[in-house]
Image (cartoon, rainbow, N blue to C red; front, side, top):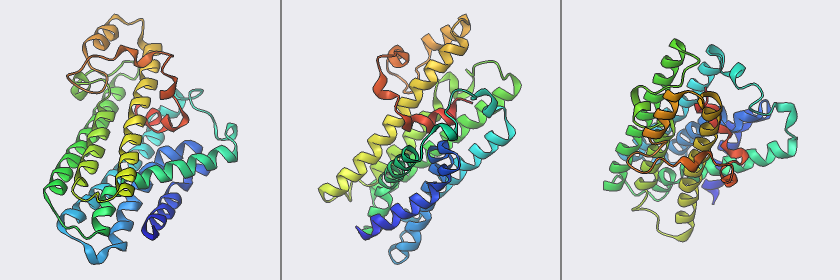
Length: 278
């Protein structure tokens, strides 16, 4: 429990930037917190380091720094803030109580998401097949997500008013989210050999299911926004009808934009909305 609370404090400190601008809890603060927990785990468990554990924590650091760095670049160098004006509540519209609740909730989620990595270090379990498989899957997901971000940014520079359907976006409509899910699937898989009690299983499952929920919620919000912006474009309608929204090789999921799916629209979805709707 002591380790959990130390890492929670680290996540809280790293995501506290959200008090300046509340969406940062789930955008910049998200990346900062994941990187900080990865670095903190290496420091706390410096005596238990193995090759697999070090690589896994390094991937968390790389993931978090890349994400936050990209978000800063996007906000500073692109017209994202102007395009999103009116779509996201301003800082003054959110009470301190709501900010505090979001802060605590997301920090807990970030610690749970990363728990397979620090469980391995805490239990001094070394590098096994699940660790190796998880690291490979996570690395692929990070590269996939970063590639999608770069491709979308490049396409938007050339044609800001056009939806993106090239590169990885010809494979699925939300490759950013797909890469994110692949990354965290790898993190979860890496711990399948080390979850030895109910508490560890619960923490890992909450973290994994939580981020998957966030991704589907974000995809729904993006679907609604895309329909609003490009719904009258026959090219977009063709693209939408022939390209899976997020998970390849399964039905298109046209219900994602349905107003009935309100359970996919809670405030926690601000991170993926802010990340991909640029």
